Image (cartoon, rainbow, N blue to C red; front, side, top):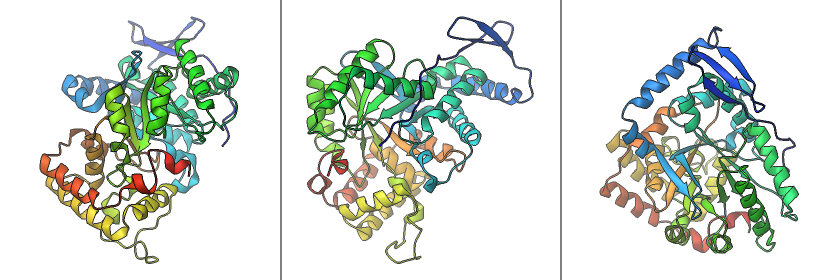
Length: 406
């Protein structure tokens, strides 16, 4: 695994003057006027006005449903959208690849639609660079209140080498430069080898960098319950742990959620629609017969098909899809919407990832439907029963993240 090569630059801060001109203030304090006069900026200004109007309608109630607060014992806190735009898909051509400008346009459309939290990583190809382009357009073309809503969650996935202060800071600075921010909203840390205790050194340096204003919140990704407890006992102010969690993979509800309840750490989940397997597209299909069903032609579909096999196989998965279809018809939403809402209702889950193929396809309406969907007791019970028919993946794979350390 290799890190991207880049250095830190100052963040541009935008504010609107009383004359209707946008004043762009650089880190050195110089103010530059940017009037809304060019033809390509007029649509952005109209979009900004529409955004203000929509944000003002039922704001308090809608915000309560749409967002969640992740917070450490030390008081570090970040408000995130409960449905997070996952950017793994920009890391490779297997999902298709759009031009950067089209991808950034798509990011703006998601943010305009109220879905303003984006998840990425230093190893996800151009993801952090796209976010940097996106956040600069938000500063120039959207109202200041929208800038407050936008959150960029990134991950750092280093090799298990010696974690010196200079090494950690150099890598964090690279992400800050790529994302064009003074402070990372959230840095989620991954570690490959638990036998190497250097993860504690890295997290302590990250905590120091947080105190210096370079990181707003420190988080984890793919850590198990045992290591999370060790990290917390070492005084690291963790706000969340990003883990694989779906109706098929309920491992986070075994041990992890219990520790999270005791400590206040929240879960952010990925794999929640299993790369698209939890959808009508795969209902009443048989992917074991060549050309008989939809192709498993992306890394995520292939990954989560293996999870289905470990859980109980394709026939049992079809029974689960049938259950989800009944619930989806009852509420008039797609299967994937039900699948994500079910996980959002689980203990300690603050947010769930839905992957975005920026500039290639969009699902803003269906994603927003997740946030308004209310599953009743009957819905939750029928889905839980269908899920429980499969094998206990804790026995087969192990705790959260163990699939990366087999």
